Image 1 (cartoon, rainbow, N blue to C red):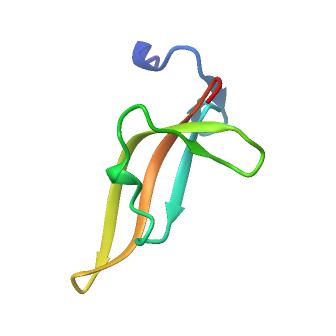
Image 2: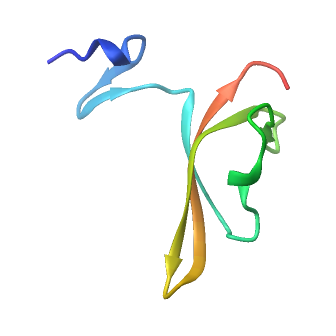
Image 3: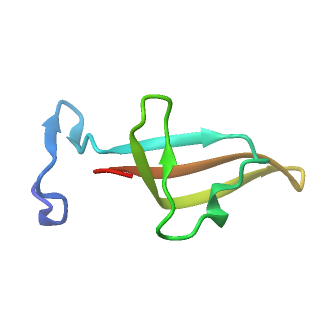
Length: 76
């Protein structure tokens, strides 16, 4: 099965992977969903990332953590 929507990735044993996307999991007090579209997250090695999708996970109506799909960008 080939899904042309995901061209450019790498096939692995369980499917296709793109190595420039990462899963972010962080505390709810760092709400990255409020970042503007041109904002970047910078890691400790200086790599920049943009947020493609972000959601807050709640436990009993209290924010528990934030998860996001982030994409590595070239430059800051």
